[in-house]
Length: 101
Image (cartoon, rainbow, N blue to C red; front, side, top):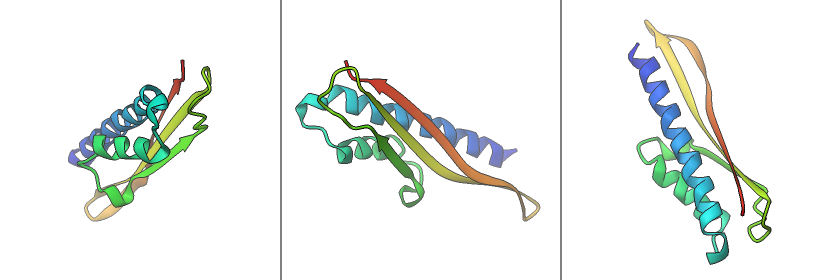
């Protein structure tokens, strides 16, 4: 039960991190934001997760084109064990899309 709770906590953290990255891309697009800035916003929002296992993908970074979408996808591995056996594992994934106005 504890491991399922941890996996859910990690998923909620990923969702918040994807939202923070997409928000950074939308708000800071005219102030010189880069993909690196978006990735840093994601990493800051997910600071309690293992940063080496955090996967970040930013799609369609057309920063100066109003009406285009920026999609931030964040992944993180999970594993749920029972009595030393892994019963479920894979990647948690959260995707957030924001439209540049």
